[in-house]
Image 1: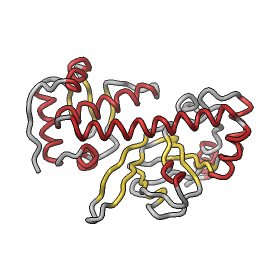
Image 2: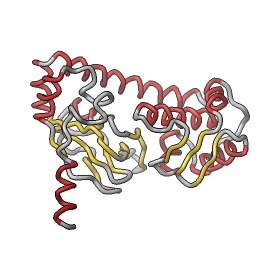
Image 3: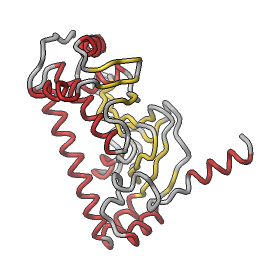
Image 4: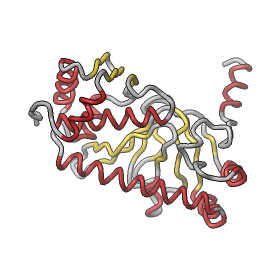
Length: 251
């Protein structure tokens, strides 16, 4: 790495909360300028994590939460049978490690799906700021509420939805989240594998592949490896409340 490349890398890590393009999605949302500056003072901006690199493991001592700046992360746990269970995916502007607030250790494991950068927020300093900054405390409560709502949505998705509805709901969720980041709602790359999608949705990988092929045949979307292009948002949304057809899930 040249001296110029090193300088650019260091400067990229110096982006403040005030100038961050994710300010409206992350913790600074609805916070006053002086509050954002105080929050910026406790942040630790890490070097980028490489694909497959872990931020933390289940059982590690929890001392921080992490805000995603770029890339994508996957949270998962290991079941009693030794199998991996995907819990969720975090995109830029979203937080991971909130489960660490419940005790002294993390209950889940978090891994980078691609080259990803994060901002680390130490619990102790964050708690102290929450006591003195009403805007930050309000934002933390909002984010915790979103986490609970997300868990409830997943339980409903797995318990009451068909295979088609699960995948349609998942793609629409990604579409909405990318749109909030100023990106295309109809064309995006999937940072996760088909295996991860199936694991998260409670579907076999063969079912996920078959559903993508079916959606493409129905001209709902086009698939080119990990690139998704949604052709008919309206029809895809209609599937969440009523399936267009029945595709049985393979065990």
